[in-house]
Amino acid sequence: RPEINAVLIELKDPRLSLEDDMILFVNKLYSTFSKLFNEGRSVSDIIINSISKAGKTDEKVFNWLVEHNKDNPKYTCLLGLFYSWEIGTENKTDDVFNLFLKAANSDNIFAQYFVGRCYETGWNIRKNTKQAMKWYNKASEAGCANAKRRLGEYYYKLNKYKKAFNYLKSAADKGNALAMNTLGICYQKGYGTKVDKVKGFKSFEKAAEKGLPDSQFELGDCYEHGIGTKENLEMSLYWYKKASQKNSNYQYH
Image (cartoon, rainbow, N blue to C red):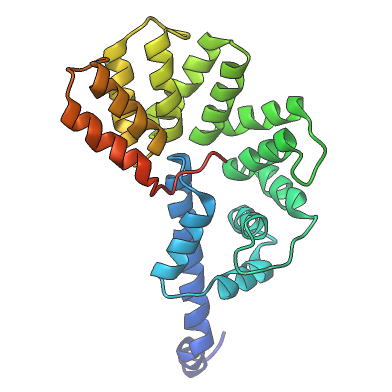
């Protein structure tokens, strides 16, 4: 058992406090990423803005993750994202897929999503739609709103609208703005559900207020033509202008 003085000296070691500070920051970064990514926000914007607000540098956080990711699926997933979006590093690695896969096999839902994304797009691995859907389903069942959205969009493109609607609504209910936009179209067109212009308008409105340009444009159109709401040319112009500015940090990952 160490003497009390030795413990106190160790506790005063600035390296220990810096390490603790980084652990707290990275855990907070992951928590912030979890929330905002599920809303459909841009990966790079979430990470870079969080680092900047904390007064840290991309390089230092990246290097810390390189050293500490081995036994923590959250850190491994984050490292995969840093490599993929070249945050804090200019070095690309062919091992990104394996980083995501390692974390995914430890039940990290966002890593599961990105394994699916890798398979769907051929990102560091050969395209395999069946595997992509398998991993999206895993992530979706564990609560990943973006995985629900991707499944909804997949079935939407196949004209399997009932399935598409259910996944999109589930993602939208979790706050995913991208899903809200496509859900609005489903309500307007009667895809997978009864035509309901009012619900379509409200779905566009929620996503527009979150800052999604596509929905801001749709909302402008609703106000211009009185779709699901009363005609209001002033509001129509307001939302068309918002959409044209395209100051959005949402991304169709």
